[in-house]
Figure (spheres, rainbow, N blue to C red):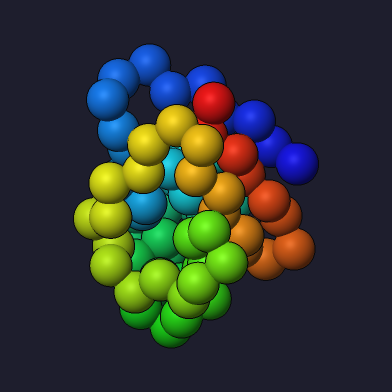
Length: 68
């Protein structure tokens, strides 16, 4: 599990994927979200700019990210 320490009110989904190095670019992040490869709190997510806040769990490519 990857713990991501949030330093602001929220982080957008595509920015989080890039920040934790699970994708190499913002374009790749947008693509994996569009292709329904990302789950947020157990549900498939297609909103690229979804605002994630503390406590959110994100699943992608066998990795779990927790916003702390």
